[in-house]
Amino acid sequence: MPTFKSSSITNADATPYVPDRANDLGAYARSFTEVFELADTADGDDAIVLRFPATAVLKRISMACDDLGSAGTISIGVHRKNADGTYTVVAAAAFASNINVNTAAVALTDYRYNVKNIDTANQPLWQLAGLSAAPSYGDLFLSITTATGTTTAGTVLFDVVAVF
Image (cartoon, rainbow, N blue to C red):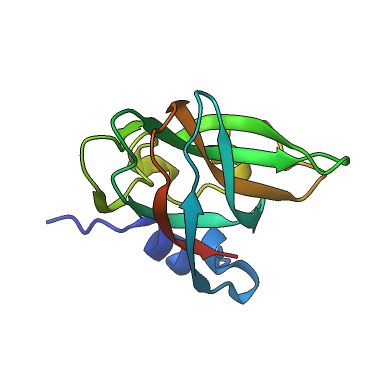
């Protein structure tokens, strides 16, 4: 019977040894939790949530929120910061789109693979955002965009695990 190996075992068995991307330079998984109040929003409003190096590998992007009113959908994506301090969308729905936040509170749910497939598990954030190369500006920002505005303010929680 054949023995099948994952890519990390194949790399470890290779001569010479091939380090795995997530283990380069002794990288560690780090957990980030952000809880904030999201105001009543309009269509297309953005909330910048967390900053990461563009080379970070995001392993989990979990989000929960209160019922945000009688209307509203949000998307989870990526923004960049401009030299003047403003933010520009890179990929508004890189991880999730049209999450219904108007019917009831949203239980803590992992959205990391909602849009991206499992083949992207070890891709850096810049690739997940659809960029063709690591950006010179260095950092990218996890964000939410209200595809449809909300009608009530409420608490939003993000729990993200990243490797860098």
